Amino acid sequence: MNEWWLIAGMVLVTFIPRYLPFALASRIRLPHALEQALNYVPIAVLTVIIVQTSLYADGKLFIAVSNPYIWGATAAFITAVIQPRLFISILMGLLTYAGAKIYLS
Amino acid sequence: MNNRRIIFDGARDSLPLIFPSMPFGIVFGAMAKSLGLSDVVTMAFSILVFAGSSQFIAITLLASGAALPVIIVTTFIVNLRHILYAFSLLPYVRSLSHRMRLAMGFLVTDETYATVINRISQAQLGNDFSRYYLGSGILMYSNWVFCTYLGIVAGNQFPQLTDFGLDIAMVVAFVGIVVANLRLPSHWICAAVAAVSGTLTYAWPNQTGLLFSSCMAIAAGVIAENIYSARNNNQTPKAGETS
Image (cartoon, rainbow over all chains, first blue to last red; front, side):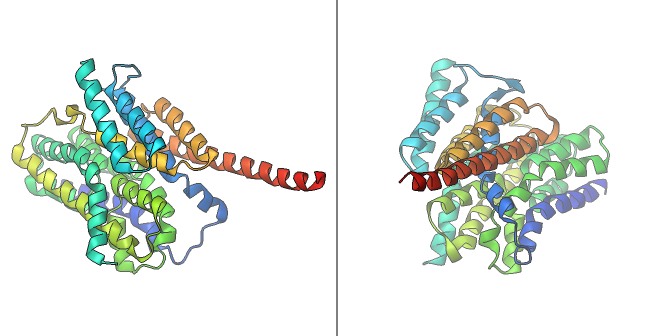
């Protein structure tokens, strides 16, 4: 029974942050400064997720040539800078990661 | 344009991102089972809550005997970044029905947000926005529920699945999406601050480092943009004076 209360509580605290801004969308007009700030959300949040996923292994900082995540992310970065197609950037990132993983371990 | 085609596009563009989430769904199912949760409760978590990292944190805390309010408050903090996502999508949501917004709100995830933002940065979606979004969201949702079920069935067969490094697909996809958004010098400054701060705050509890670093990076980007535009405004009249 305890678990169902937990699920109910989690549904609330998960759904409200996701839905509330949408629910109020037609009623609120955001101030210009806030709209400007929100343009930076994807860059900021996704970059943090990228570094926290790729620079840490087993909870420890792992910045070294033997970290295949760094190779994969760097390859994807360079590919994305020189050409616009996301699919090709992902492919280059994955191939480089696989190569680094096989070659370095 | 063809409605089904747009839904399909949203699902197709999310495909690289379902692979990293698959092992997490499977491990969640297996872990919940090994912690003694019933199959129904485990499935209810994934069907009703639909939040990967929060679900892991919840069952880990549950197993360690944490009190209900502690688990719920922790979940809330972990989910706060979704408020940022939802706010940044506001301009595209205004004209949609409340039923559609309800569905879209339920389906907010890192992956769907990243997919949709990437599409927006490439082309104006207009009325197709909600269909594209649903295509991505429904794929992520059904994948999550299905993989949870697989995990329950498989039991403890895959304890090491997360060690396979499948989250590299998420990393490289996010890298590509971030780069596509780097148009102004201030965008680069935002990314640099996010990278440094994210690295330094990794050990903070319950992803508060993620929240803190995101806010720092957003502030840095806005300040940089304002400095650049102030400088440009100063230069234009000066150029006029000299001529």
